Length: 198
Figure (spheres, rainbow, N blue to C red):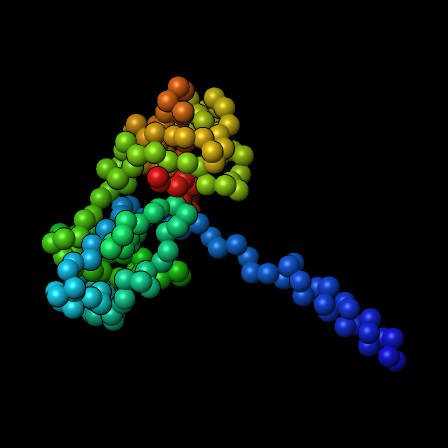
């Protein structure tokens, strides 16, 4: 009896190790653009925080959100000091629809004067990007045109330095180490980042 108990305990310990760890966090969603929420001087910060979320622009308030609770966009994007980033899925005048939690739920925010919205075409053009590690082989291939069936020009790694020249939907034309050029996808078909911006 005691031997069986010890055997069961050993089996439980063996299966409760690293194999039972949490699955890796999914890459962040990209949306259609990025909202940079800049902090303002402390004396007026109370007027801007927390963020007020709505179901529609100005209608059906969902609630308040601390900018610290916005989904983390690392490793895809790095945020400047005193700023927060939010993924934008739609824009209507001074209102932007943002992803406000890790589950992908969305709400509308009215933009403040010191906030900045940029479409991905505007944001990515001219920036240095790198492929995120752990991607499938077909996603790391430099292509001759913006098509997964276009001839592959070579494989890229997460160490390859890529400068964005042009943006076309989910594809970007890049200079590789300032010598070669070709097309890569910067977001996948599920709308998740494939690159990190430097």
